[in-house]
Amino acid sequence: MATDPETTDPKATEPMATDPETTDPKPAGPTAEPAAADGARDPQEPPAPDQESGTAGAGGKPEAEGGAETTEHTRRRTRGRRIRRTALAVLLVLLLPLLTAETALRVNYLGDPADGTHTRNRDAIWLGHAWVDGRKDDADLTALARSLKTTGIRDLYVHTGPLEHDGTLPESRYPEARRLIDAVHRQLPGVRVQAFLGDVLATEGPDGMRLAKAGTRAAVVDSARQVLDAGYDGVHLDLEPLHSDDGDYLSLLDDVRAVTRPRGAQLSVAAHQIDPLPSLHSVFGLFTKHPKWWSQEFFGQVARRVDQIAVMSYDTAQPLEGTYGGYVAQQTSLALEVTPPTTHLLMGLPFYYESNFDHWGHAETVAAAVRGVRLGLSRTDADRELFGVAAYIDFAATETNWAEYREGWVR
Image 1 (spheres, rainbow, N blue to C red):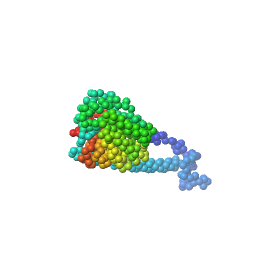
Image 2: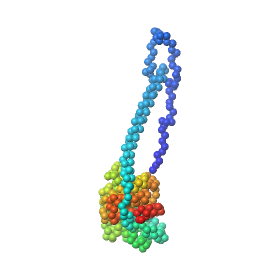
Image 3: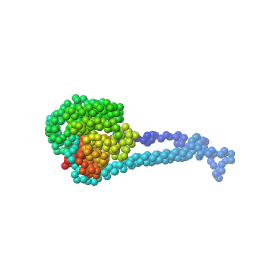
Image 4: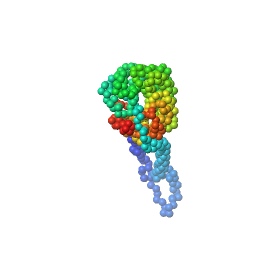
């Protein structure tokens, strides 16, 4: 959120030019002869030049030139007013839809959630890489287990990648994975540990993973098989930025699920937000390289191919808690409408604080997100069983984040 720099009008400081010919009140020619008493001219005197029609010159009148300057000044003022009015009209045209949308989101945040719209004990949390690379010890694991027992969290998405751009995963990236998995299974029976595998896609720049390559997709499938062999309970894919209607991604999900399903393992994905207005991703795609949203149809296509789909319902650029909560309520409804009841839907919670154009920390609070989730659930499918929230991310979470999650959702 850049602050607009202070601008200076150069016209306000530029000195006005002085016309030497208009500042001297004395006539340039010889002193005129006195007129006759009756106002008649001397018969021998030639006719006086028509000085009132002139604008400059040795014998021109200052009053005439000043009148021309006044006329030009008036024209400039009129043009200035016309430009300002046009600029204001353009600004209103641009702002009116935005203000209308923000007002609608704020209205969407009104009302009371239905009874029973709280945790189904099917929540999740994204965990950082420190849990599998040796930075976390047994004491950390014990503290984590103690904390999770007072929540509805049953799935841990543990960062195990990143994947290489060719889809491969070096085993050296997760040397302590087995220790973590065994400790969780021992201390938290029923909690699943999924391998969080992510990478940057080459959709908006020259570098990154290219899903259009069949060999790359096959390597990702092999990486999924690899982490399941290491003891993980599932595979969680987070490939970004992923544009809507990507057929190669859908093909990848089909291939990965062919590996996870026979083993009784989970296939889960982190999903982009859904168009808050129809085809908004297409409109954004015309002006930017980052369309941001998925179409609701594409979201449904993804949801039908996985066991769990977690919406990254944060980094929304919403400026107020009320509009952010209304936005989450809308996203929850849109996702519920196209997610089959056999797929576990989770809505993301921002367990971190940032303040920038994409994420206003004072607005994107866990309390607002939880209330928005409950409102969307109440209005769309209050009895949905395979439903929960997913917290992002453990190493940035504050006590306030945890308290708002427990008070608003776990109870």
